[in-house]
Amino acid sequence: MKPTSFLIARHAGTMWNERDKLIGRQDAELSMTGLVQAERLARVLADVKIDSIYTSRLGRAIDTGKVVAKYHRLRIQTDPALDERGWGIFEGKNRKEIAKDLKRLEKSAEEISGTESAYEFEKRVIDFLEKSIQKNEGKTILIVSHEGPVRVMQNYFVRFDTTKHDDDFHASLAGISEFLVKKLDPLEVAIKRWDQVDYLK
Image 1 (cartoon, rainbow, N blue to C red):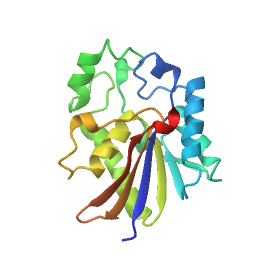
Image 2: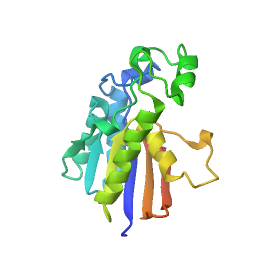
Image 3: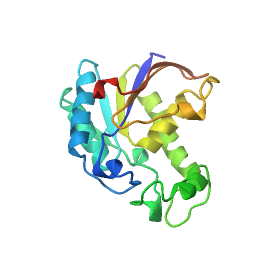
């Protein structure tokens, strides 16, 4: 197969992020800081030939994607598979206050109070990714999503890399990772960027 490049970015910052609130499926506009972050992300990708841009259906990802898209004269394509994990009654609460609940549900199959199970969440993200690999052979794809889906995609691409540990998986606001898929069976991937954020300074 022809190598396929995946650029995977988390959306830029919102006021909810600045207040350390769990957003989940709620919508939140980019803050003033977030707008600056989105523009800096767009500029670092301005010279990259991007063929398609996919985002979640949530405003903060769409707005970040649109800032990048204007440099490439592309229309973004939204997909529900890229939405953040649903956290039900925990959405809108301060992360520190619900840290124990989040830890318990992080890898759990249970679905309580409208939360989405870890299995269903990871399955939909991986299904999207695998279909995208097949569909976009030889192209460069930008995906703008959220902390949860970005971490799932990072895990997927480096699942055979024994040097990666839990502490290595980061999804910074407006940070970007890049993976070059060289072969599918068995999966052969080159890591080009890993949660790059130096351009935000």
